[in-house]
Image (cartoon, rainbow, N blue to C red; front, top):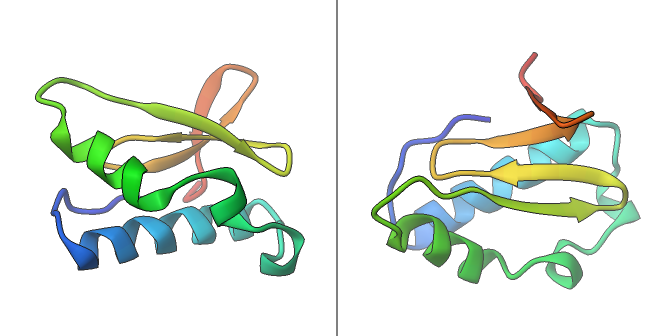
Length: 86
């Protein structure tokens, strides 16, 4: 899920939507997880946009490994990043 690198409330909303859409593309229903129990989306957004270098944050939601960068939310499968758009 690609998104433009912005900051502020709409960027936070965009990141949250991108993560949820990626999880749904992997077959995970919204009722199967509580995202806020897994990751602080506001803190994640701050980390992604406060770094001057390349940054990637990885975490797992109900067995689905995600890699989040300022540009995308990707699913990690067998150590190879695989976009949910594919």
